[in-house]
Image 1 (tube, rainbow over the protein chains, first blue to last red):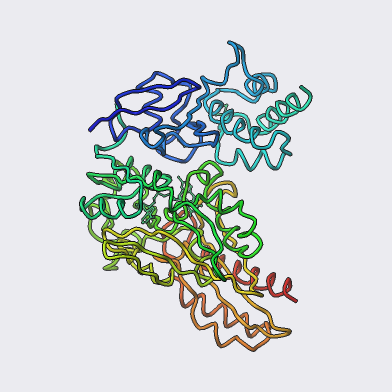
Image 2: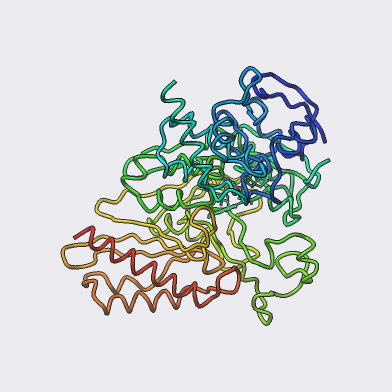
Length: 157
Length: 326
Ligand SMILES: Cc1cc2nc3c(=O)[nH]c(=O)nc-3n(C[C@H](O)[C@H](O)[C@H](O)COP(=O)(O)OP(=O)(O)OC[C@H]3O[C@@H](n4cnc5c(N)ncnc54)[C@H](O)[C@@H]3O)c2cc1C
Ligand code: FES
Ligand code: FES
């Protein structure tokens, strides 16, 4: 069974006909070709699929597409500002917080949710906020450095 | 392409409608935060023709004081529960247990109702269809017998929710809405010691709220052993509530999770009331725990380790609360 799903995606209102059993992750990746949001596991384990729903981090692999009807969904594609990397993306790049890059969209979205509610988090707070996002490459230290750098930049801006 | 089996999605806006829909669609399932149900559906562990989504039922999302009780709606997220200053001040075990569930992104959508009604877990069950088939399935789904205890006639999958033991230790009750109205029962009575039928809920019933007494002078705490501090289910989780009256115990409650098919309230502790917390008291506590839990080979850590961990967590919490109350 299908029905119309309307939501705001990266600031734009959308309406699509979506099957009821579609996960938000499949809607974004396969329906809209927004493949920045990653599928890293078979459900709920890795955080690679993290997006924002009304500003809160959410696992797109464990959310039904119709479950976010009428809400504001933001993905990594919505992070760029006027065609340029946003401060978090740039900080990940400059601090080597990304290696293979597979966990990066989820890390950036989880960090974005944190910085919106707490623009000056200490390192422990960043660790807790990213606790559900797994990275097989960096060893996490440079990811924490990157989020700290982005927060510093925001504070001095 | 979809990674999910087919179903119809129903989106009621009131609890009464949710119950009516559940009654009208016999094998349907409720979904709240979806962090347990949806991964399980993806793995083929749950099959249903209709999913009833509770996200639009706003009336179940609240935390409010009512007389000498705190009422918490089933749709309250664990993040909201963990961040609530009233809960942290009066019911630390509840706050700590909510904060110990999964990772922060799960907690932002995971609900209290979903946590209390969580499916039981087992290393032979929480696997892909391919893995389970290669292992000839098990009695919880598609197969015969229990892989954990081959001679057993029952399923030993473990209840592994973190919040239930905290609420049981705090004497919480739950409101359950069915087609015939609301009934209220002690939370401990919501559970059955059966990995396949762990909830004493009627097929159309919806858990709507939890009522926790705000009893003056109670100290409480929750602790769990897990593989990764950041995210994992409890290998064993223990909640303790106690009241100290001078040099004597006035109240002691202990409840555990991850070590039986239901969250278990440890019995026989009332004989400690009026006695000091000495070595003999600790022996009684350790024996009671040993008698009441049934840690089986359901997860990555062995049974002996989980039994010991349960006793050690309980001893540490009891000692800590006793000292804090002194
Ligand atoms: C990687 C990972 C780690 C996890 N770690 C933990 C952990 O450490 N501790 C822990 O406790 N859990 C853990 N979980 C499980 C889960 O995230 C939580 O238990 C969560 O609280 C479930 O709530 P939910 O709202 O998402 O439930 P849902 O998935 O929406 O529902 C769970 C079950 O409850 C039923 N249900 C939901 N609401 C109601 C209601 N009001 N009345 C009747 N039935 C209802 C549903 O039908 C379903 O069967 C983990 C999950 C993952 C993926
Ligand atoms: S894809 Fe791994 S948590 Fe969603
Ligand atoms: S950069 Fe490769 S998984 Fe994180």
